[in-house]
Image (spheres, rainbow, N blue to C red):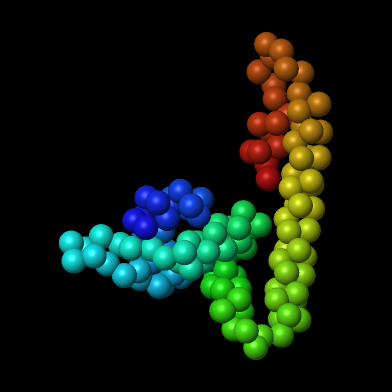
Length: 129
């Protein structure tokens, strides 16, 4: 299949497929004599794997590691689990940071009169931090 077909089948845009190829995340596909990329079903499965990994918030470096583990049939599932647990811990940290940001903004928005006055505690806070 061509790059457009592979993009539709995998959920990854053609631009991102070319990017993943340029950074070595996916191997360069076969090409026709005219230079068009040809993708196999396995290539599409790899792209789907990457797409799902990105949807779960894994970085490209983490996905590179996960791909290596996926392709290694002698890997220990403990290695994969450890990566998932580390990623969960990082997500929890980010969620806590975002919750704190939300609480702060909610408090600032509540203290703002929201009328014609020029005095604004939100801007005051941003200027002092």
